[in-house]
Length: 111
Image 1 (cartoon, rainbow, N blue to C red):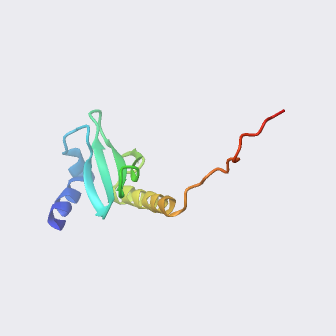
Image 2 (image 1 turned 135 degrees about the vertical axis):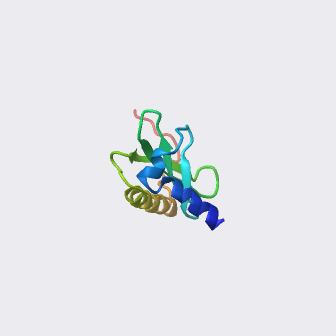
Image 3 (image 1 turned 45 degrees about the vertical axis):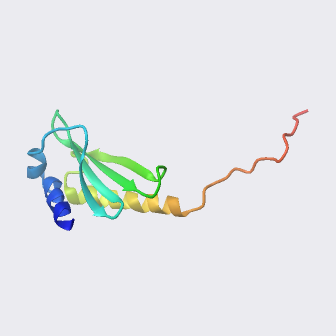
């Protein structure tokens, strides 16, 4: 499986290779770590957009974030760095207990 992932990484790791990709709606994904992916969506109008995806357990833990356009993140390495920073935020948010608002046991009257 690692061989497949390396060949996928080779599709988006240089600007020359990204230019040769066909534009399509779904991104070209590369697995960086288990549950963590970086994607590149080639635009019809030129350039493309970098996307990060985290796939945890369950439906609610799947998250995606648009990292930015290729003009903002000009290389795979820069986009990967942004994606890894976002992955840390996601993992930290999932690890912390959910914020619960304290509600009164009985409704109180304003009068």
